[in-house]
Structures are given as C-alpha cells and as structure tokens.
Length: 509
Image (cartoon, one colour):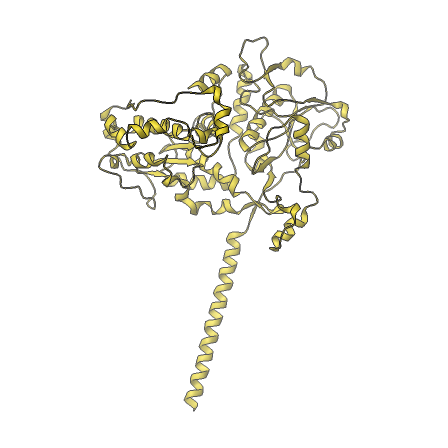
C-alpha cells in the first residue's frame, strides 16, 4: 500500500514537473516570438525639422504627387531641380503607397482625390483590427494604402535645396504656416499628363519629346508670387538640365536620392555578400507583370538572354538553338503575347513593331579570355547551391546571375527557363527569404499598415544594382533609376546625367 502511494506521488510530481517545463517553454517561446514580430515603426519628421523658413519673405514651390513610387520619385527629382533653379524652398508631400496607385488626373480632380485620401475619423478601424474584430464598410480600404516620408528612403540633408515636409495637401496649412492668402499662390493647373516641358536655356532648338509646349525658365523667374503650385511634374526630362551648372545640380540631387534606409540596405547587403559582393555577379531587372511589359515579356527576356550568351558564354549557334528549344520556339518568343489584354494591343495598333529576329551569336570576348575566366569557381556563400548544368553549361558556373523580377515563381516560369538552363548559378530573391525578416516588420504603426509588399521589389532591385553588369527593362522607371543612380553608386562610380538629345537617342536603342 505504501509502495502504491509513493508511486502515485511520484507520478503527480513528474506530471507537475512536465507541466511546469511545458509552461516555461511556452512563455519563453511566446516572448521570443513577440520580440521577433515586434513592428519596426516608420519615423515621421516634423514639417520644419530640416529647415526653418523666413516668415514673410520666403518663396516656395509645391506639386501634387500621383501614381506609383517611382513616378513620385521622378516628380520629386524634377521639383527639387526646379526649386534649385528658382531659389525656392520645396514643400515636399509624403510618398503615397497604394494598390492600386492613384493615377494622374487633371489638377482639380487630382487635388480633390488627394484631399479625400485621408484616414481622419477612422481611428476605430485600427482599434477593431488590433482586436481581430469584423471591420465595417468604411474600414475595408483602410489598410490598402498609406503614406510615408521621403526621409524613410533618403538622407534629405544631402540635398542642395531646402525642404519643408508638407503634412497634407490642403491650402489652409499653407496659409497658416507661412502667413499667406490665396492671392500669394500662382497655380499651374495641368490638363494633360505631359502638358509642358521646362527649358533652362533660351533660345534653343531642342525637341519637346512627348510634351505639348515648353515653358522657359526665365518666365518662371519673373513670377513673384510666394508660392508656385504645380500639379503633376512627372516625366523624365520634364525639367531640362542643359547647362553645366544645372547638370551639376541634377547630379547632386541624384546622388542624394540613393536608398539609405538601414533595414532595406542591410538586407540587400547581406544577400549581395552571399553572391560574392559588389561587382561579382550579373544583375538583372526583368519587369513582365503588367501593362506593356507583360505584352512584350518574351521579347524582353529573349533580348537579355542573348546579351548574356554573347557576353558570358562561348556557345555555338547550334547550341543556342538547342537551349532555346528550337527556331520555332525562338520565333514565338519574338512576338507579343496574344493572350494578354486585347485592348492593350489595340491601344498600340498604330505602333506595330516587327520584333522578329533570327538567332545569332556575337561573342564579345575571345575564346582564350573565356577559357581563363571559366576555370574560376563562383565566389558565393557555402549555403548557396548552383544547379548541376549539363556538360556544356556546367562550365558557366562562375557567371553568377541575380534576377530581380515580378514574374510569379521565376524558377518555373516558362519564359525564364532558358536563363536558368544556360546559367546554373542563377539566383532569385526567394533563395534568401531568411534575410527579409526585418523588412516584414516595417510598418506604419499608427495605421497597422505593413510595408513589405511595397519594399520587397525595392530590395530586389537594390541587390541587382550591385552587379558588375546590369541588364534591365527598357522604358521601366525602376530600371532607369538603377541604371542612372543605384548601379553606378553601388559599384563605386558616379551617377549618370545626360542631356535631352543623348537621352532621346538612348531610348531608341
């Protein structure tokens, strides 16, 4: 009987001990999980944090933001350049992040839409969401958009222009903050997306590209109103920088507008280091997910594929044909996608282009140089594994390739298949998911809006910008940003600035 009692007591003690250990582990894991998932907040600067204007004599310039991040970035660059020309302080609106993005609209409509784009009076939405409760109808879009300050991305103290952060786009804030009245504001209310181009030299015979008419800088200099208020200032080369002094100003602005966010840059650097470091791989930006880019996705990828083959392989014409799955498949890859948005094809009906091109091989390196290079092993992290390749392509393993793309499931995407087939050491962002945990924690805490979906494509392109060679998507604003700014700076060079004629010639290539 005593033995039975002692056994029962022992069982009770063991059960209690197991329960305690389980409870303790649960508490530790819970704390660790909470620490790992703790949001990293966006810090919003005060309006006058970087510059305190003269109360009654300062002159300002402002504009209305619209469209996606990179269109807004181009707007900011143009506005900074124009403010520098006119010796005005720039009133900088925040970056609007939304899906879908707000499109360009005529001035009055765009201003109205931006005023309605507010979360005032919707504090209950975040409270309900934090408790996991059902959301009323007015809250359904509350978490699909937000705004963040430009200081989240860039070091704004490096700019050659004084800036004040405009918290909203209502005129009342302007009146109250700078002792203004409505007569102090001169408006440029655009009625079309590319209405005017601002020329810094007069006279000149430069073409106006897609713009309808030109405004000379000396005309703007004569406007004495304390505020010049524009609508959209989007468009590459909307504000020209043709003089040496103005080109230098543009270079200063572009040099300052390099991604500096420590979380984004930290993630990109860790991945770049695993790829061998800066200047140790080929970086690519392949946009194929929407619009005209989706329509011509196979053509873009075929162009990039042949650039890589010519520059980094010694494949014969017969071998290239084999890796392209034959001439018939190549010819299909040189046509626009007949299955994508017929209306988009119709919109470009009078701009039909014959993209057909025979398979050719034009190697840019000698065979002896090629053999020397391809005896080296890829300088990548031990955790990364290249594909085996076949007897021919296994020799190309030292050409490490990183593809930044919006294509779904890139490794299994039919259009990208030939790239992975010929270059066994090709990597994509999903190969480095462990490095993105901090990005997933970034959020506008006050609104409970996570920024991951907006930031991941930026990190993707930041990585590709570190390559010794960068191949991008023609007419993509993101590719242009990488080519002109990120790639030069990340690989130890200066940002690119070119005149209008040189730019127009480059767009024909």
